Length: 104
Ligand SMILES: [Zn+2]
Ligand SMILES: [Zn+2]
Image (cartoon, rainbow, N blue to C red; front, side):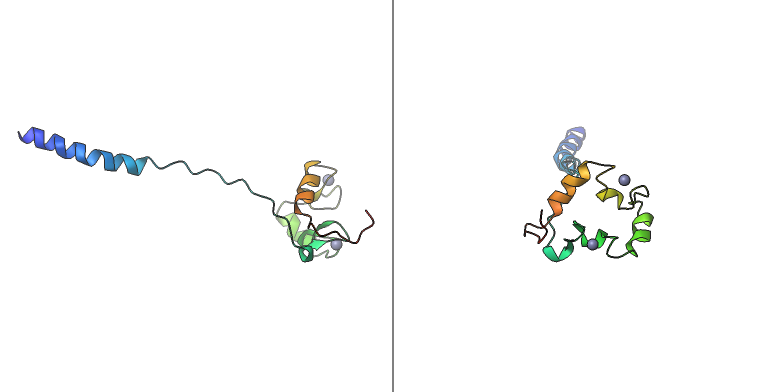
């Protein structure tokens, strides 16, 4: 009899314990490239303004420190189309919709 009660208690505790363990695995969030606002975009150099080392040379050491620098082409590695053709897609995805004044 005592054994039976203990078993019941165990069964009652069971499902609750299982639910706690059964959390769905967190799905890794894919970093989504967001379109920037026109004021965040350097239309002159066709790069995000905060990455434009042509406009502000002070960004270079910052990018180097972040290990996002292509010394060969003198541009942020993540923007270097010559090293990574996908960089163009990333730029296209970020470029504001508003038509820039450039001739292209
Ligand atoms: Zn610029
Ligand atoms: Zn490069």
